[in-house]
Image (tube, rainbow, N blue to C red; front, side, top):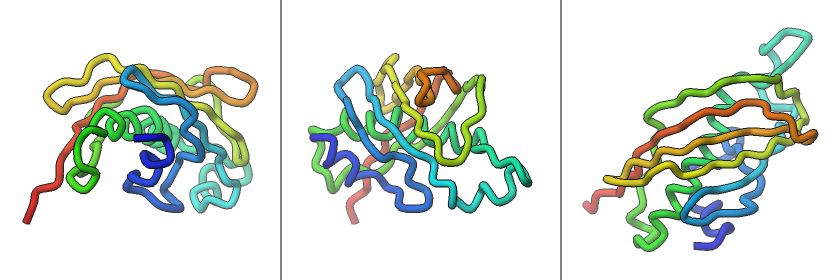
Amino acid sequence: MNTQEILKALPYSYPFLFVDELSAIDENGATGSYTFNPELEFYKGHFKDNPVTPGVILTETMAQIGLVCLGIHLMGNTDQQSIGHVMLTSTAIDFMKPVFPGEKVTVVSEKVYFRFKKLHCTVSMTNAAGETVCKGTLSGMVTLKLNG
């Protein structure tokens, strides 16, 4: 699968799609980016008069780019109609810097292992200045759709 096919296969849509571009992907990892739209609803209350991107949204962005896109790629030899989802099963993320509305981030993931349909990756997110925003590990299960 090429990067456009992978993006098309993502099970998300606005306002919960946090992947603008998938710039690199192979059997060992993925790299992609996302720019946080200042109009996203969660900025209105997190935090009042000083909005920052919630950590759970940063984690989700890393999962969509670094785990789900990679999982779809790894299952690419499977008929597209049979791929179910890549479901997040565990996270261990350290947060170093805030991400503000309008900021572009880049996510890089490296596969640690993929066996028995479980994918485990190290992930990092950097801002436009190249500073590490957050990093850690993510795991997920690649599921297949059941026929019938």
